[in-house]
Image (cartoon, rainbow, N blue to C red; front, side, top):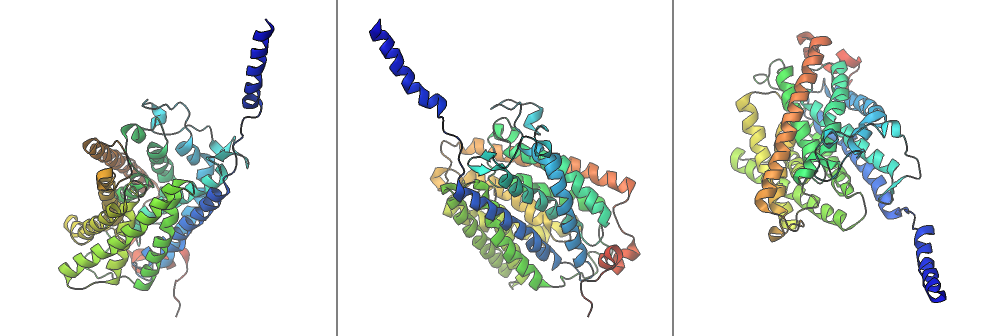
Length: 437
């Protein structure tokens, strides 16, 4: 009897440290610092990066209106993000692997107004406040990518209402479908999207296309010349986008780890390959290389590698950047004119088409035989999973964007008058001019 009691006592001694002194989650300082830097980098690629990239392509009488729209959208997006959109994207209540229900499409409101989150709340060793801020930068830039297509003719008030509704009804749910984890519909399907090929780029590209079809063409387009007013701005903007995109892609690892290292290299290589691809095809087709083409090639390569950044190797990154750039070139130079939609800064051609090409190529170059990092992948199954993710994004975004645009048009109206458009939105909407000399 004494011998048995002794064994029980010793067993309890071994259990006590596990029960009483269980290891608490601890702060990962390196990853926390990197995520803070990533949030700042993505903010930089938004303003001034994206604003300069788009603004340089517009006429001088409208450049200030675009910057103003971006700042206003940032303000309203932050309020909505904290109020409920963050909860819609991140909450995983009622979700389990392979199960399909309402929360496979959108998260619940359990984290509305950041309830239950404080300065000590950690996710993977990183304060959740930091991850909330990082996610907010994505939520700010995505609708602004889309509204660039509407430039030079859409009312300021209509832009702000559109951005608020679109962020809530389109971006929030789609971000959850992609990154919601086990139980989210695209996760269940096995879709590979590391940093936003679907939720950010295809999403904003389709919103741009649907939006301009509802909004209509600028007066005089395409017969009246509307050349970019400052291509230096566009080149500077592209350079800032390139630098900031490392926060976008590498930061999506949510940690300072080997995955981030892969994304760093693939992002760099795909961008350079995108520049090279556009340069080659433009020289062949137009007999000269333009600064706008070089900037567009860089963005095309960045868009293409976004869903693939951590899933492909160096050779895959080069192929994705090069091929995406060529496809985007044809979308800009041929598709747009053939179908006659007035996308002011080629959002659909660069982000929509580039996102689709990148998503499909992700499913090909992710396999280890082609240098990819995804083990036990079936090429055919993965290809169809990628296509399914693209189709879901197109249908969901297209339908809701159309409803939002139509609803605004029937209430406050979408467009300024023809006379106001002729004067320019800077003076009409803001009573200011970008240039006074």
